[in-house]
Each structure stands twice: as C-alpha cells, then as structure tokens.
Image 1 (cartoon, one colour):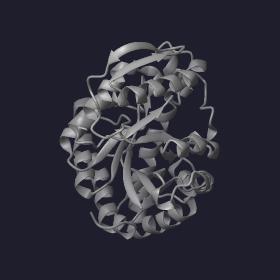
Image 2 (tube, rainbow, N blue to C red):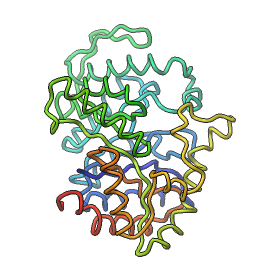
Image 3 (cartoon, rainbow, N blue to C red):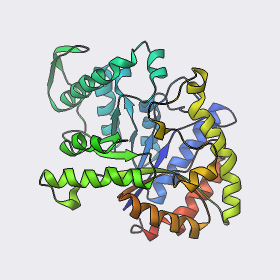
Image 4 (cartoon, rainbow, N blue to C red):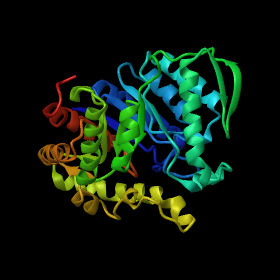
Length: 340
C-alpha cells in the first residue's frame, strides 16, 4: 500500500504569486514526508486548475524535490501538438532523474475543448492518435506517422526519456470495461468513485491482469482519490473542511454552471456539502483515529493498492494543509505502509 497526493491547484484567496509559492512549499513537505507520487490536474479557463500548463508547474516541482515522483493527471492530449509534448515529457523525465509519471487522457470537459477550437466529438479519435504518436516518438529515433489528425515523416527524435521505454502511464478510469486496455498496456489507474464503484474496477483489473498471465504482485497501481482534512479533533477538522469544500465544488462546477451543463458522467459530480461527501465515502475529516478507521475500511472495500490524498483544496490555508499532512504522516500513513 502506497500513498500519494492529488492536486487540482484550484484557486484560493490571495495573489497568484503567493499561491504558487505556498503550493511549492507544500510539495516540498510531501517529498520529505515520504509520499510516493504527486499528481496534478490540467484544466483551462477555470479556477479549478491553476496548473493549466502542467509541464511548467512540474518543472518547478522537479527542482524542489528529490524523491517524490510526479506527473500530470492527466495531460489532455487533444490540446497538444504531439512533437511539443514528446519534448516536454523527455525534458521533465531527464531533469528529474526519471521521476515523471505520465498521465494521459482526452479531458473531461467539452467546454474547455471548445475554447481551444476542438469539436468534443473529435477528442476520442484525436486522443487515440495522439497517444500512438506520443509513445512512438518516445521509443524511436525517427518518427513517421500517418493519421487523420497528425502526419509526420522522418522527424528526428533528438530527446529521449530517462525511463525506458517511457515513463509509467497513468489514466483516470470510471468504468470496469476500461480495465481491458489498461491491463493490456500496463497502465496505472485512478478512480474518483465510492468504494463499491472502485471495487468493481479493481476486481475487473485483477481478473484482466491474471488472464494475461501476469502474477498478482506485479499489477500496476489501482488508486482512488479522497479529500482528507485532519486536525486534533473531529469537530475542528469538519469545521475546517466544510467551507473549503464548498469553494472547491463551486470551482469544479463553475464552467459547467456558466454553460448550463453537467458532466456526462454524473459520478464525477460530488455532493453539495462535505458531510454528504463524507457519508458516501468520498471524503474524510477528523482526528487520527477517525481517519485511520475510515481508510482501513475504504482500502479494503475498494480493493486499492494506492491512495491519493487531496489535502489542499478550496479555501484551505497553507497552514491547515501542513497540519493535515503532518498528522497524516505521523499518525496514519505508517499504519498502512512502512515508514519512509
């Protein structure tokens, strides 16, 4: 069992320069605490995501950390020119000593895609082509590709990643059927569902992995994402979490509300209040004992081997996040994994 951190980089109060400085200080704390990975979302034209250029942000993360693995969750492939992204992936992996985790996807928001002039009906085939180009470019000395959206002939691939054949792939998953492709391609997965929904995915992944002849202990990471706020008492943690969650959820839905829309996958829409999110097992706020008990059940019920903690969200201050992180690493994390 390993633990990582997921970060939407959603806007809080205060100036942006202070926001980035505080976030980098938190990333340093995650590194020192022994978390396995740090995963950042990509969003555009919304307060939900202030790391709209993940490579720029992660280049700073690479320089402020020494052990922490990191990556986008995910690069929204239809928004990138593949040659540019190949270069960025190689640079980040080399600059970090091979710590990049390569998250890939087509993006959850048709609104954001339209802002970039992309028809949402094109994103699935564009993603498939872009992924093929990306992986081919990371593994060959010269790139040639002919497709509907991308065409390249005899392009020299001067840069290479440090991790071979390429950094480990990560993918957001919402349905058990998605495990067929991920198992075939050795892809790590992250769900955003409650424990029963997650269990349907992890059970199917294990079955697909075994059917391919792989040993159970070699299965990739199967993760779930949880909001976590900790304090000395349950009451204090809840009082801190409730307003921060409301602001995070407002940021999450801001573009959707503006266009009178909702995500096609309703499971992606979180409950209105933190207490309801906690009651459905998608968040937890409390002291060490309450959080430990919740995670023991959540890990077992979901069948996961990796937990992503969403410590920083909404209006939470740097000090509040540092307190959660410290309590988690001192009183919770060691109960499920060896000390770093």
